[in-house]
Structure formats: structure tokens, C-alpha cells
Length: 517
Image 1 (cartoon, rainbow, N blue to C red):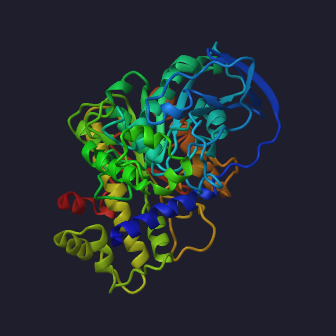
Image 2: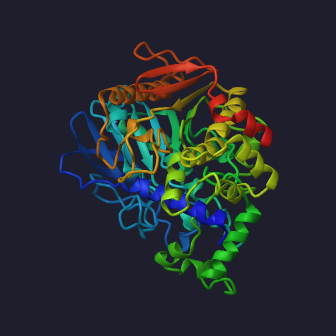
């Protein structure tokens, strides 16, 4: 395994550790509430000020012959289906989901509504796609009641196929490489059809996500079959201009590359020389498949669902022209840098050129980066974090913003709370600032547990929810209760200073990365 792969794997492992703090707590037993949808009755839970309906199937279980097949309609059920607790997460290794999951019957979604919502006055709908590198994550990790009640919106969180089960590509599997994205579209079709029963406005749907979920929004913007399935988009830390040579941010890969990886996986599982490779793969037990799959997963383009790489589609203006709210965190790379250092890879002035070369193997690139980001005696961690963050998130987000803003109304933010609560236990080797995923506790109670926020951070959380939900309602995030956010600016979000700036690029060296290519 190359040093690049080792360090990237450590970074991906870090995101799994981050997510462990998000696992759901055992549910209490609140009062119940029942709603009828086309497939049958669902019994949800009534809480103080809001209602939840969890584990609703939006597609048939992708098991047996439906493993590695496009999602099929859900099967109606008799009687009343219990929706008072989450269903199984999609198969994944242990991490965000304690002990992981091996249950392929996982195409479910969760609905959170204000308790006075009804068909007479339908509310805007936000559909949330979780992150996790297309390998881990669960919709049930995101308790959306604060967003639903404060913002007066209906929130839907979605589970979609992950890892090889969602993104394996093989010539014998039509539609492969994008089954996870197809699941997301099936969930959006369910929302258009069913959300009215929960008081949601089926004609006012915002598709939102973070990290791999944010990049999924990019993919759906570029996917022809997603036309008409959503009306606005929110992209958090998942810039549409990611690429495989920037390995910490999500991206897509060409179908031949994905098929080459799929062929290698089939051989690893003993199916490479089988007479019927797809049938052989469908017989592989889930635990064995999870153990054999790569840590990295990406959707494939040059496929029927995703004909064009999202960056190419957006550059050419060939995407669904809906308003977009997009942003990143000020210190995206610090969590990965800290994890890599703690795993026994110190970053010093002496080791810095080798570390850079592991990620930027072109000698000219590596030397230029070392000159632009010099490491001194004690700042190796923050400098490494700045390189990861600038190359993978801040500067690609700035580029995505420019491309989108030329075509559609676009608002851009930067989350910059340097004292954001940590998502991991223990003491990092240097202060992390506002790393990857640190904005999420301001929007959701992760795992159902409120984060330990200061009074000023609670005010910031309320302001962010106000911006996000006003955007979902009217396309304009501005309102009398929040600082004005002009378009063509970057809104800096920090507890003591919420203000637009003309640009955030200088502190992120984006001119350098643009010149580097």
C-alpha cells in the first residue's frame, strides 16, 4: 500500500471516529400519531412541539436479485406500520453506527414535522443526505427537530446504499456505479408523492447534504433523471469541483476506472472467474463484502444516471438551474491532519516535503506547495490542515460558487467558529478550529443528543437554522432577525461575528491553487 493510500485511509478512519459521537440514543416511548400514505398507515411519535416518523420504506429491500439493481417501489403493508424508532442503517463497518450494519433492508427515510403542520398550510421540505464518504452514515443520526420547529419546515433524512453495495461498477450490472444515487432519487420521488400527508409542500423541496451528502447534491444537479425532483439545493463541504487527486473531498470517477475497481473486488471475493459474476457476487455475505471493499468509494460518471462528471456539467452550465446555498468550514482539513499525526506520522520541517509528496506526487507541485505553505518548528499540524482544507474544500467551493453564480442565484458561507465543540473525545495535537463536519451540531442534534454549546453558539445555531430554512422557503436566506447576507459575498459564521465579506480566498491561498491547476 502506498504512503498516499495509508494516509488517506487514516483520514477516512478519522471520519468514522468523528461519527461515533453521533450514534443514536435509545428512544423513549412518547405518544403516538398516525398518518396514511399510499403504501399504508404509519404510526409515528408525538413529542413536545414536533412529530417524528422513522424507518418508512421508500423502496423495496435491495436483497437477493435486487442487490445491485435500481431501486424498486416499496411493497404496501397491511395494518399500521410502527414508525416510532429508526430502521437499520445501510450496511457499513463499525463507526457512526455502533457495531456497523449488515442489514440490506435499509432503504428507509425519517420525517420530522412541527406538531401543528397539516395539509391546509403545507410547509417547505428539506431532504437531508448524510455524509460519510459514501461508506458510512445514517439518516437517523440527524435529529432534525430544532430545524423543523424553529424553521417551521418538514425535514426528511434519507438512508441510501453505501460502499460497494451502492457504488460497485461491473459490466454485468446495468446501472452500476450509481445505485446509491438512484436510491436518493427514489427518495425524492417518494417525497413528491407522499410528503403532503405529513404537511409538507411537495412543490417546495430543498435537497441538502454535507460532505458525501453535499457532493450527492452536486451529482443530482447534474443527473438528468433528477429533473423536477427538487427546487433548491444546499451543499455543505461537498464542492462540486472535487477530483480524485484531491482525496479528502468527495468526487466521482469515470466508469472505466470504477469498473476496474469492481473487477478487482470481484476477484478478491472469488467471483472473478465465475461463469455468472453478478450471481456470484449476489451470494457473497455482507460481512465478507464489507471486509473486502475499499475504504474509498465514489459514484461513477459516464453512466446512464450520471452521464457527465458534475464538474464538467456545472462548468458547461448543463445542470438543473435551481438556487443554491453553498459553503465550507474555515479549518476543514485540521481533523484529518490531527488524526494522521496521532496515528504516528509527525509533520515537521524535515518530514514536510515527504508528506506533501505523498498527496501531490508531481515534483513540481510538491515543491511549490512546500514553498507556499512552509512548516516551522511547531506549526506542522495546522499547516498540513490548511493544505488539506484549501486544496480539497475551500478553494473548490470558491470555484463551484463562481460557476453556479453565473447561472443561478447562489449564496455562499464559511463556518468559522474557532471554538466549535469537538466531535471526538481526547485531546488533539493542536487546536482544530472549525474542522470538517463541525457545523453539523449547529443544525442538528447528532444522535439525538444536544451538543454542549455556549450561549453565543446557541445564538449562532439559531441564526444558521434561520438562514437555511428561509432559503428553503423563499430562496432568499435574509430576514429581519439576522444580519443581511448579500449575494456575491461570503458570509462568515462565527458566534461573535456574523458578517459578509467580499472574499475569503486570500486566507485560503486560492490564487495559488488556481494557478497550480
